[in-house]
Image (cartoon, rainbow, N blue to C red; front, side):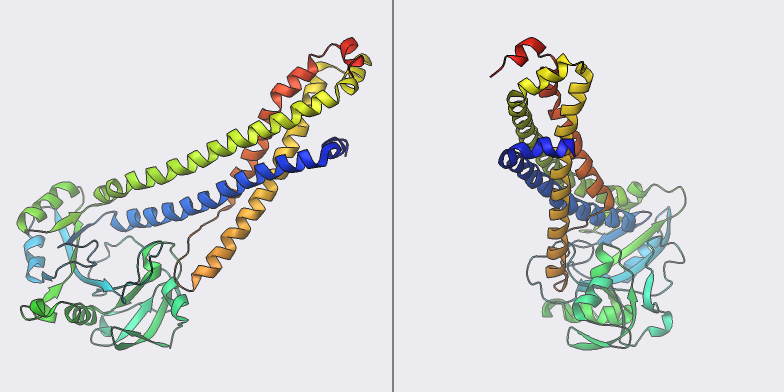
Length: 388
């Protein structure tokens, strides 16, 4: 209560200082939550590409790419070090609309069990079942969590993709990455959808049952992924073979830039908040010079004076941090809920983010209070008692 009473002596000044810290911590929480979302997307992509090589002709991950003939599966399988090759079809689930934060809605099709147990990216079910080989030839689908939420679809419902109706047989648990916005359909159905999505000039040259939009290659134990990727690109002209390391390298620079922005926001919060607290505490010390002189005259030690003023500064930081974290969490929740129906979830706030922001603000207050506290502790008791 003593600390609170000291801070409320100048309510306006203390309030303005707390407000400045609150805004800085709010910005830190919001942008850190956005960085968490980006890291989740990148981490999901890294997990997906781990242990495999994805081969496409143009586009990225088969989206917007040209078709690959199924005959290339046997060619790739003969490359030294290749264990399993899975042809797949991938295309957009609809027309590209507004810019979204993360992967667009897409359709993915591969024959169930074709990976022979090599796939390590786990897709857990929330309800329903996974696709099986018996589903080939039927218009059924398993939905990613955000896609299902956007369409308000559950198991037993019917959805429309590219003017075709699909019965929903399963909905996946959230992964916070690409599978959340993906619809999984049988391979033959995906071939037909991809074929119908091709320009007429290409449809005249291929049959639906003879094409894929990507090949998923699983190297054997101890094989050199990079060497296999180079061999695939040499064998199949105009293809891109993406390994896990190549994926990480392709996105690491963008993620580094984004994280640098977060660090910059933290530094701005540090400078602005720190200067505000130093100013507030320095003025407080000046106004309480006689009080400090009396305390020193009756035996208060320098460490006690320093500790008292640093606790006041730390309390200012803690109050600002609490308000900033609360405001940041409120913004994250409201924006996520407002954009969830469109399939765009911008933020991922974690307990670690909240604790870091609060600790950052509190420590900032304590550190910023060191200089005024040290100056107060060094006051000469006699001079302080005569101070007007």
